[in-house]
Image 1 (cartoon, rainbow, N blue to C red):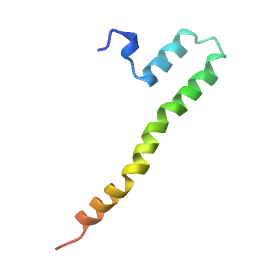
Image 2: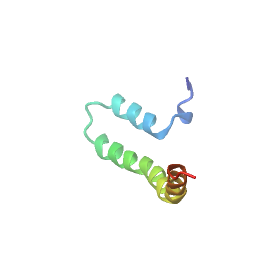
Image 3: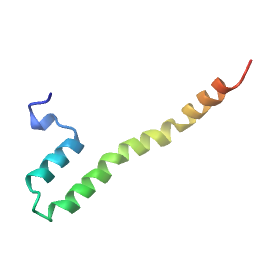
Image 4: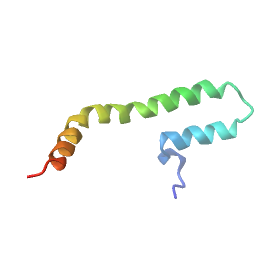
Length: 64
């Protein structure tokens, strides 16, 4: 869908750069580091919103 590479998500950009240099083993540490960095915002959001999800699950599970 996206034709401009600047608009790619970080995971797709990492995959594209890895597939272009498939024989280059120097790219693997870069891709692993980029993958770890791309997961950090998700972990932060889960930790920040965990109390709201827990409260809603408890409220929905109670009768009355």
